[in-house]
Length: 156
Image 1 (cartoon, rainbow, N blue to C red):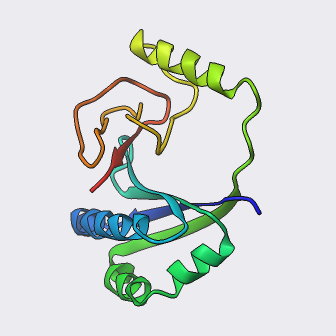
Image 2: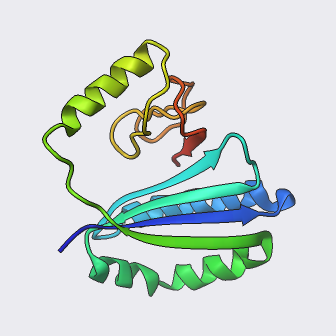
């Protein structure tokens, strides 16, 4: 069975953005510890401070079902519900990369090192090449280089 990816876009009222981001950082940290969670990241677009994105990867639907039934899910939604203007979740199926994928990553990283925009962001594997934020495991650091993504990765 294929890995399940979830992209969630929130539009947050400006007066609640900081509290929402902190809530989602804690939720991401707890979610990453769950069986079957392969990725759970919080991203902040640089050009739209009203939006917050979650990128989630789950081993399968069964793991996501367990996650969705946790009591903290309802608690979080009750807390952040009044803070939102909108919420959109998109379920995706991850497809296997072809044999050229490693070469594409190497070309992208070489371009980033040279100051050229990447053609895609690398999310969830090693230092992230997203404009404005890079991370060492478990921390938020200084910018690594520009990309076309226009988002910063927030990791608790």
